[in-house]
Image (cartoon, rainbow, N blue to C red; front, side, top):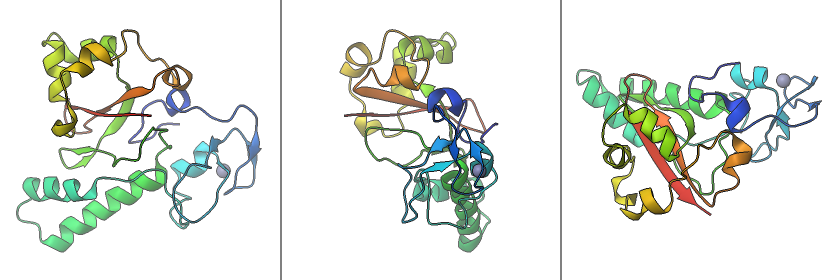
Length: 200
Ligand SMILES: [Zn+2]
């Protein structure tokens, strides 16, 4: 199962260990834990097929919150000739797709899902020194790390040496070992890498 805005969710969030009833199709399957989803519908579990095929769209439930204000600004820059309501429509459609068909990324704090180049970014993993080194492709890695910050006001020079893990974070269980996490995203339309970080 592939998701537009989330790479390898089976590793980075994982499914429940035992089969449960999916709240939308009623089948007994390996499901995502839906208890942390947002919205007024109380879901317990949803299977990857139901999530991917958009069965949350008709419900008051969503898995994340997109940075739609920035998305609209980027879309307007890319398409200066489009009218405001056209920009609004494109942004709304992308936001519904993001918030209703993307697995839930477990984070310490609530923050908005980043966008780049006129679309939401894809989550590609938890930041570590080896991961940034690989992504930097020979560029000075600390500079690459700094330049990847979505909110540059949240960058500080201590983070690289003090907080970015030395070892790769291979999966969700690994990520639980850390009280500070760097969430690494990639633009769908370029090689741009975006970092969001938070702590407990
Ligand atoms: Zn289902």
